[in-house]
Amino acid sequence: MKTPSIVLCVLLAWVGAAFAAVDANTASVDALRGVRGVGPTIAQRIVDERRKGPYSSLDDLQARVRGIGESSVRKMAAAGLTVGAAPRPQPSGGTGRVHEVAPTAAASPRPAGSAATPGPAASGRPSR
Image (tube, rainbow, N blue to C red):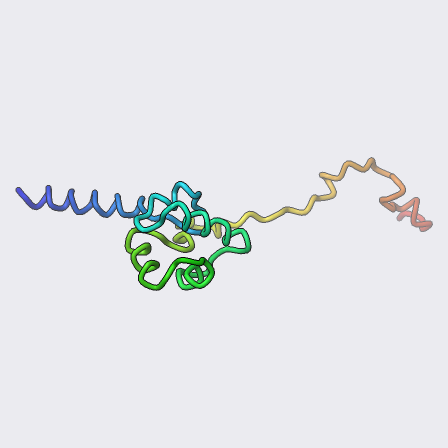
């Protein structure tokens, strides 16, 4: 019965790796320092440069942050550094977007017959 225990170990390792991912666009300095290869200085530089705009890719991060070379960014990526969170699954039947709804006439706080709402008497025409 080694198969169930092997499957369990692989599953736990996969789940642990999923939680180890650190997004350079949202992580704090402390979270970035948790990535192997990112020290306090580099972590602070990543956050400081991010204030100018989000990173579009790991290549963009490497180009913008002084002190991160090609081999360093590869090691950081292997240790869990990412750019841009993975898209969240959307509930079926919806887009996940929030739409504003225009107020209806029933929701209007104006009293009936106010000057802002022309009715038959305000238009100058007789009502039928």
